[in-house]
Length: 154
Image (spheres, rainbow, N blue to C red):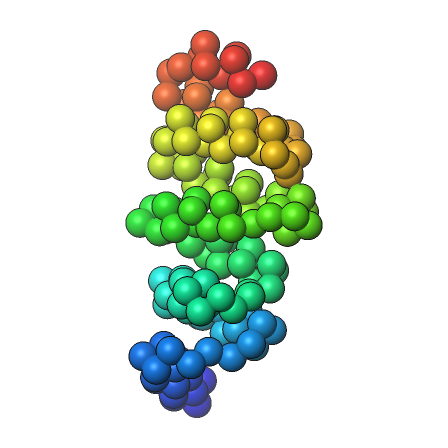
């Protein structure tokens, strides 16, 4: 039963995307969150992008859920990284989890340069990074054998 509902919901969302007709705020967020929970982060990202082009607002918690879902795959981390730029005001100030998820994924991919750049961005613009973020970058630097860079982060 759940599979047939999933197929039906996907076909409805495909029709919605093709027609360009989108629901408002909270419903939009529910669709994005639902796609993420079903492991369809790329489809959720397509909905998010369409919402942006139509100037529809997406709830910050749905954006955070989408960023976390995109961070699970190396192929979609760049989308998550770009989405961090869309967070502003309260959503950015309280958005430590999406930022931490992106840094964790960048470190997993051994992309310490971008992780460190994002850390510096967090320090200058917020949200304030926690100890875990520093630990991730230091650990990634040491795994790459770059102890001088690890010391620099500290």
